[in-house]
Length: 248
Length: 248
Figure 1 (cartoon, rainbow over the protein chains, first blue to last red):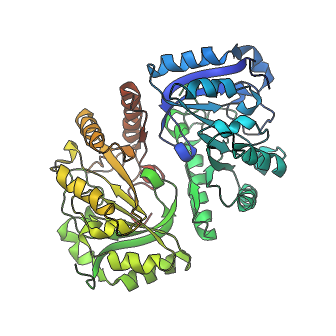
Figure 2: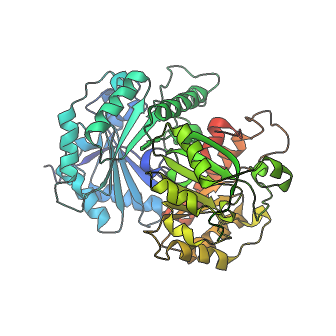
Figure 3: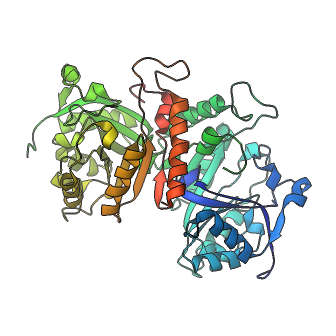
């Protein structure tokens, strides 16, 4: 493990609030890493994924990252959300150790393709398997390895949630199949933000908010019809509030 | 206690999802009772509050209410959200007993003005003290009595949350003062839905969604500035999705 390796950072911003998933509305500083092993068809953070942006990814030490987080939070301990790209690629353990020693908590958002022993040290682990509409290949073993890593006894273990972006019926069936294999893990569904290539006349910053809201209504209808009363249907609320802007 | 009394029902609808607070996105059937001891300036459910609608409030037995809920849920156990008006006015204990025996769970939304021993039997208790902008009078003792009732040992006790509608700085100061007296209870803030009297050209069903979103952004800014990193800032999401329509 590259314990002393640098972490490739795309952006650090906040405090804002988490805009989606189990922690929606909770104040947090985002630490977005650069680089991803996936390339989802509807990726909304290409600037942290596509290697053509690699020059923008600053290699930083855990110490420098935490300093930047503290500068933003006024020195107060806050939830740090590790996102990407796929942050599981990066050597994040020293940052977690350093931050937790000073009262910070850590959440990670990852697709569940790469398992790390330090997942067990996190406070929150969001695993977001990518459905068929992403045009990526799902590996059930990789996801199971991530869950096992988080529960390896190295720490208290994080609160784990499954979060599925859903575009259509095939995605919904995928989500239901995967969650049925992990019935003890809370499941969150959210409409895919299928960012159009060009600005949309009815949207904000190129996002078609009406279509996103319509997809949410459809998701609620389908979840209710199926009687999946233990599944949470959440918006990508930050997109409604701030559009697809960076730094919010 | 009117254990065998009838419950005044304004509406029963669902399954839909909870649109606000700690359970946002969770499938639920709403049971809205008629009648309220408050009259908030910005009340968005006057049809369950104003006595002029009293003729619409059907007196129902716990058995009949649960039958209606089961009809809607296809017989499957689901979260039942007791709302109003102020549902704490009604004799809801027999409904909770009857439903829990069949696997249903119960959440209540109340302003915290009337304490009931059966709060202890609930699964979720949302206490929503009304801030200065409501033009009602807050009684700290009544709120404390509600919390004490929920923790009276009669049951396992519900998950309790505080939820504050916030319109302005005075409301924000009020929320912070009240939450500071109950530091062990998770605190949720949401922008007040100050429904205008007439349909708004930019809104849905008379709701000015842009103003609601702008108030959300303001809330996030103030919470971040104040370093209240343990407070959740949530939208009244259902208003964005369905407007102020009934039955959603």
